Image 1: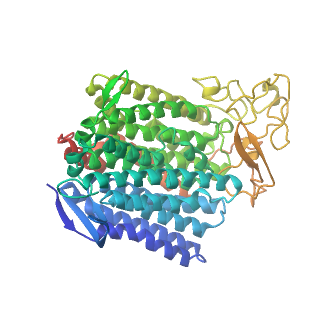
Image 2: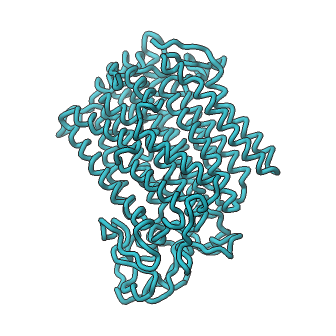
Image 3: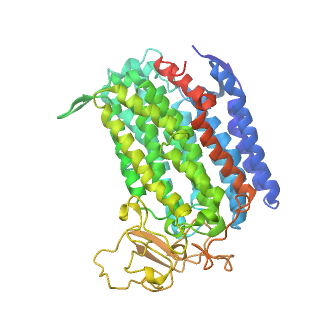
Length: 634
């Protein structure tokens, strides 16, 4: 039985970045001071969370409860238990380096509204830690909705039509969609537990709420409804299909925001919420005691439909990622797939699979944050966003692309990187299940191959191709793998027209001899004309002027805008006419961006090489032992 101690540190960890919002706004005339507040708050938050880790590992739970109650039996409670500390430690640690990186990125592009950006960033981390330390379903709902609101200015930062549309979609999915479902599920759980002997409760318990287990079998339909409402509501932020489309559209935001969305706070809050439902609201026992009767199949546990949805998502999203030429959109669909690994591992309910799913939370965070940091650095230094324009870029940005390779290896589950460890445990857990478990084990293996298929072309293009002559993407030389034909910058190498979107899809019904105008009235790519880079035609993730016109390409709305902004004298998109300049690893960008890239990539390797020395593995072990009674690490 855990020892519960009243302590103010959970509240302080939430408030430190909330107070920082005011300090950032007050320092708007002094950029150095403004950014210093972000770094100082990140260090303070991490210190507060880290100070509780030793006690949590020894079985202590730190709790702070505000006087008064939301409703009868439910108050505003913050608890630093093993699962909450696990998520808070990860997000607070990564925020330290994201604060440095965001400073280098925003200054490198001379972005507008930087004070608003850093204030919203701090508010987002305050909400994320609030989700981590929430002690009951109602408290987590409050912070879950607050996170959607404070991240909206980040998604819509560019303030053009595309950014506003992405922001509206993000709020519609996560605030009005996911939030309403979580609230409905919370209300049902409260109503169900009201008939229990101990009275209504929403407090989390390791292995599931005892009050809910007591009454669930008496009202199985309502208990099943509550389970699926909660899982679906949290699954919106976890981007489980078909609730995923907001994530790719949110890539219009600045790259540090993409890192926040994909690695640190938003999608991880969704995965964390699903973890709470499986491990601390219903628990494996109650989930198994509430089977669904499916015609033609028979009775299956509540976890099986969730596992099927996750397996489908990680496979389908990987296939879609292979078609994306825009690097950040490829990474977005990769995130959709990777988050479903976590959901799948949890839904298998086997201790090893749950252990692997929990460890995949930091494994994915370190790997995916590395990938987005690298994509942002490439954008700041070269304004290149499309994979088909990156031939030979490895010599211009050797450290960045080497770190990208490390992150990609982790996402593909290659040995010696963090992703291998987490996926290995999930695979063994699926096989240990027997029966239908082999289907999910196979989906894990197939998705691993697909991960290689959509990451390898990026690495190959950067290091093994040149600006003068670069061939079709290796391994998969058809649209799913990128360009179907060989392509080169010189006109004589071009022999057939390609789609106006840079290779993501061909135009149907187009004659091979017909020339196609670009959306902005320019010449079509190839066919003897000067090569026009895709970034000159489509919005990217940096500041753009207000749109004067718009068009639709392959069903996606794009604004025809000036991407050069205040940098008209700089080359935009792809290699310059003279080719990439060869630079040393420490001269390719500023230290504000290179240091976070190097540290986070190194962290991904450390988690893969010596995972038993990582505190995340110890915390995952404590969580699984408390829920299932099985010790994974002796």
